[in-house]
Image 1 (tube, rainbow, N blue to C red):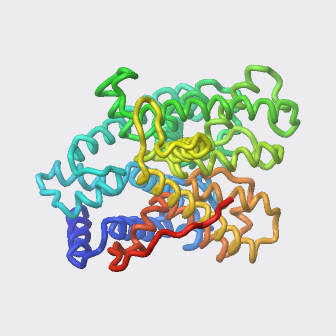
Image 2: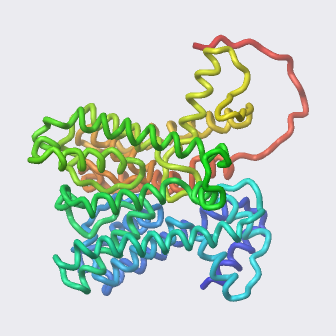
Image 3: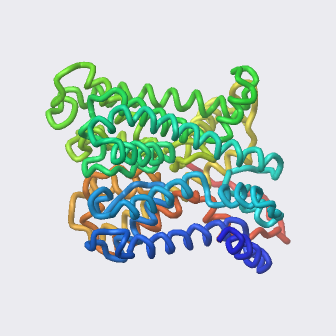
Length: 449
């Protein structure tokens, strides 16, 4: 299987396909293969169509978590194992697994495959890719094993050893990969006041959402002063977003009888507001019903889903670093500065242009998807906006609109999930062709704002 994937990638590279194109093709193939397996009789209970299986496979590989059928009841144990494998492969990266296993088999990982792996891991250099791949796998396995052990203390007494172990393992894999798939029909609403479930799940998807480059930097340097600029931006930006989200969710929902107001103790309310504050960062689990939330909280959640987590992580969105650079560029404009500076480092025009391109493509994708889906959707507009943004950020949170979409709406959501997982810039690099201007024109003046 791995040899055929490697040969397939090599044949594509010989035809001068760009690494982003190869990466997109491989992901699409795995989604199709996953859909075929999930449609087989031994994978589902008989009520799953190929369209349902295709949507589930796309959601799993893109680690989104949006569903059109119930994962726990409509898929058999084999189907659930397939979904867990698709989540693991999609979250850590297809090329990551291929690189690790090919190296274990003593097979050479050539330059074309290394170029694709570099794009998948969000790196700018081919150096130390092997070391980063090993770190990705080791961190994932350790975190998922520890998470499974903690969750077993809750699920085993409730479901027994076999079923409890599977519940713990599945949710640990889903959480670390920021997938949001749950074997419970109401996600984790039944465990809204359980500190072990809440803390374990949130720690797992926060570690996965930081990015493996940050984790490697923390492991190697372990001191704030010696961390890279990227790591400092991710850690400080994530902390600000988490605290801000926690305070805002608690303030906006404290007396809402459909959410926090229905909980008896202050501790449960604080725990639930914490969970809902961090889960929009592409995790997709929920312990409260998002359909019952205030409009203000819903809009704030949409904003957090659009931002997402960190580059080279299991998270989606435009990324925390993109938001920070946008803010820095705005401040630099008002201060009449020609360069961005933070933490004793400066950022040039290339970073700003890349951020502007990423943000523009992301907003265009969300707005275009929203427009096309709205042509056939008759429900509430806010619910649809929530769903489309959740798909782009590969979050998986839902206000119930996904199950009401027709075939066109589902297709749009799948495309948005796919592009959201690969990254809008991947699509941009795939479509764009580098060219050098033969004629230079004099500078012009455009009035903006």
